[in-house]
Structure formats: C-alpha cells, structure tokens
Image 1 (cartoon, rainbow, N blue to C red):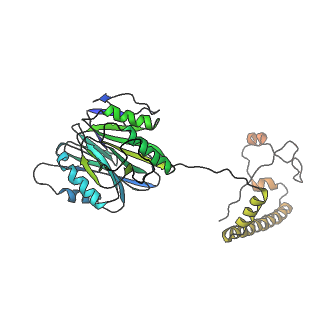
Image 2 (image 1 turned 180 degrees about the vertical axis):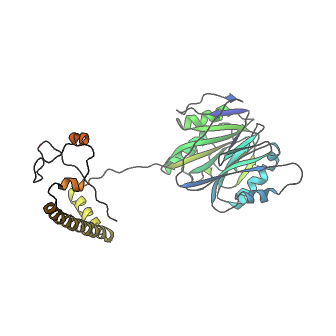
Image 3 (image 1 turned 60 degrees about the horizontal axis):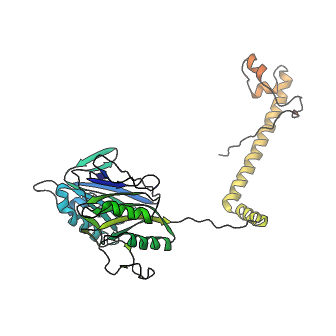
Length: 348
C-alpha cells in the first residue's frame, strides 16, 4: 500500500538521509515477519449514497479478531472519513497499534494478488496479526530527539533492537528535522516517511518525560498502542523492534555427547527404525544368497554367461573398453589403486 505525497523522506541502505525529495521520488519499505500474517484493504469513497464505512471495513475482514497493527492512508473524500475509520478499527481492536496519515497527493494504491488498484478518493491500509513487533511513538513538541532517546531506552531495556521505522509527520512541522532526529538516535536503521495533512497515532501521553532531567526509568512509557486518533502538529513513528538473539558459550564434553546419543537411541521411534533397517538388511542378504545359488546353477547350464553379464549390461564394446573395474581378480579383491564407493539403501 502507498500513495502520492508532496514530500518524501527516506534513508539510504546505510541509514543516512539523502535529503528531502519532492514529487517524482520513490521510497519502498520491505519487511519480513515469519511469525506474522498480513492483509491489506482498499475502500473507495464514492460520492452520493454508498455502504457505510463500518460495513465496508467488515466486508474487507478488517474487524475480525486478532489484528494487532494497522497502517492506514487516505486521500480525496477519504480524508473526511479517516477519523471514523480509525475509531471503528480501534474499537474492534483496542490493543492494536494504529498509525498513518492523510496523504498530501492525489492518489493511493494497493497491490494485492498481482493486481494494483489506484484510488483517488478512499482509504488503504495494511493489517498485521501474530508476532508483529511494532509499537508507536508520538511526538508533539518540535524537538523529537529527547522522546526518541526515551523510546530507544525502552527498546533496549526490553532486550530488543530496532529493525526499521515509518514516520508520518505534520506538514506544519520540519519533516527533515523529524527524520534527522530518528537517524541520529537510530543510526543505520531504515526509515520511510512523509508529511501528512493529519497524523494517526496514539494520543500523546501528557505525563511522559518532558525533559532529560526526568527519571527515564519511571513507569511512564514513550511508546505504546491503543487509543489512536487523528491529530495535528505531531510526528508519529512506527517502530519495528524485535528481541535480540543471543547465543551463550557452553562447554560440551564427550560424556555429554555420549549420554545424549544413548538417550536418543532409546526413543521408541528410533528403536523402531533401527529394527526395520536390521530386518531390511537381513532380507536383502537372504535375497542375494538365493541369487548367488541360482547363479551357480545357471553356470552349470551356460558357461558362456558370466555373473557380471547377469547383473549389468555395460552397453557397447567401446563403453566396455572405457569401463574400469575396481576389482582385478575373481575373488573380488579390491585393487590397490581403486577407491571404495558409497552406497544407499531405501527402506519402504
């Protein structure tokens, strides 16, 4: 989902900001969340009579239980319906983080099932459920660095790292400064953002720390979810934070490996597989023995046919000349220069 904007902000691959881009630029954010499910919707707001917005959201499966994150944009006549859409979504999902804004351009798009739908009047959005590591930060003051630093302490205090961010900032603010504040606090972290004619995010917490002199360990949080509304002169950040994976160093001794191996071999399914393999090997040996005995009887009747001819057809004489056997004598002794080949057994 996306749309046209008057001004576009985004980071390079190394996290640095290239500066402000006017119409004609493009920013694309890609994310992979293996433990999450995602869906999208596009609601066209037509003039005259049309289905109610709650009914349209219901038809798009937006009100089904389980959605934890919503990113929404609107344009045209959709701007007049955005507050209602946010209220309906938040009422259906009270704990969800809802962010977004009113796009400054003339169109929105939704790409779904190899089709792209363009709207000039409507609302588009992304919905996530499952393990979705997004929380929202809303900055009301002009200086965003202090609240972004508070958010960073929260993220790191929870043993997490920031994967990337989205930004929706008011057109009356300095969008470049809001983006630079993010890049300063979270260097080399991807960010895509745009100025909006109204921003969607949780209501600003009036009791949040207003200066660096306040104790950052107090229970008041800078980030959160729920209570989303359409507001103005704010910078709304969507922060994708995930737990940092760590690997502890440990010593593994021979007796530990031996005990684990013995424990594994005692499992019923392993015992069953071993028994099946033993039975298959015994059956195969018996079949080979019967074949050898039959081969001895055939040799008495036909001395010209060899065991090798009975087992394999090497093809033409030219191919026979190019074939090198690993065995030189009749007893099957391995040639000193030969190499032992591997083999496979299939158990059905």
